[in-house]
Image: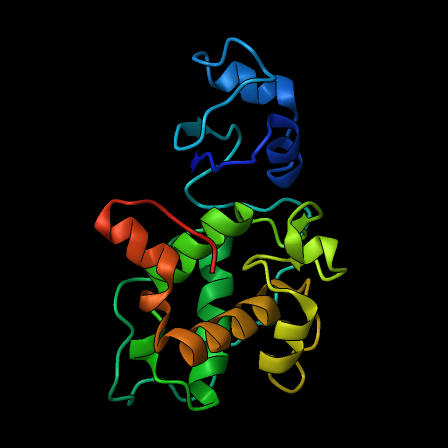
Length: 200
């Protein structure tokens, strides 16, 4: 996975964020000759990230493949990506759809892009260094929600911020409420325009 370095980033903070170490980042980025000097707007290769966002040692969420699903009028834009994160996205979308969220407001490919940039597909990711963390509300989980936002947008019975499906549900509901759809999140708009991802 590539990450666009932002002003204020350090290799040690990025290593912690992406669950790796500084030496692995340097090894994966031969253009870095001084591990104490990186440049904003440069791309950083994050080692060990896979397109499928395979998370290790994480219990799979509930199996929601049953029920009535064929006769819905609105369709999600794009296919659900393969792999574990794709499975979690599908489960969350099924729950959201059952709770009245229109599927055309939650593009699974865009949800996957947010997850890729926010947590690299790690449901246990926690950001302990940004302004939210300094205020005592670190960003947690696949979509890096803070606890107050998670609590405001979770659905009943989906109360665990570290549960991948619960985190996606809250993150998607927040995105739709604030931006109108997942596809309108500034980071997705930035990727589509070529200016790069920004957090939401």
